[in-house]
Image: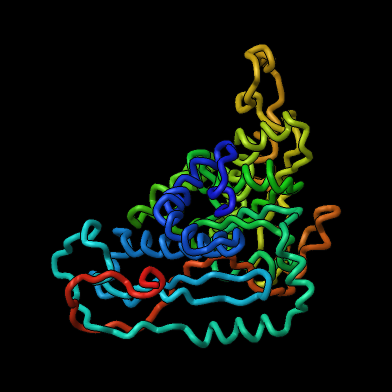
Length: 405
């Protein structure tokens, strides 16, 4: 992403997402280019600058400010991962209180909890674990990852910390491209997920897009209730739409099966959203071989259930969602025409829950449904971790560290 932002080639929809990195480039390029003559070093420093700027974006965010105002103990860290040696570097740009918020972004909160100069936890124990992991890797293998990535799979999953894609799939670094969010929701208007999808399909040429939900999903559970959660309720609306559309089938289920069923229906519906996207349909129009799959993971057994809902061509979609080049490209709807989407969603809504001790395979993809862990997949991390807080808030000041160098 940073490399693309340093260039001038148009990448389509992805350019909208990269515009934020271009702002970083615009701010730091003159200083970096005057100080470093070697292109590789300039690239590395721009990656560091991007991480540092994203830390500032997180720190200035109203959500984090509100958390600090109510006394929540939370610290924002800026780290960067070196693919060549497998090691994380702390960029020494971190914040744990309202005093680190930029004055122009700082909001006033009534009854805000004051904090003093609480020392920032540098998370040395986590960095030491990374050192141990990096030392155990084959140096030649790590070096082989540097030139480029050629993953076969794109994983669109939930942000839940209990469902790490590489560990669940039993694959190593470079084999799966990953995007995660709350409840594996895919919004056509979400620039982040659409940018990931476009980059993975049109530039990395992945052949399989896997939308993977999980049973026991907290986002789905929240959508099934009526308690307000704030901003996240906007995100959860699409799950509530799924529940609304399938209310009759869900209501006929025993109470203990409803949660699992809604998790399945949400995953299937998000796979439909991916297939409906202009990114996938444009890929098919260009002759790219890409299939969208719908899977769901069970935490208690570590196994994946294939919902047997996949899309590999326009004929798999309802005609109303097809994006024609010309109006005449889509045949008019006629009474009696079969809607393939309606049939498959109805099947999932009325099917019995799978046995909890079994996983369902997916042809050639079944081999990757194991549970082996192979390392970290972080390439420029902004880590948010819990730490202890305290009393008093001194005057505002800029975070020390990377920007002071």
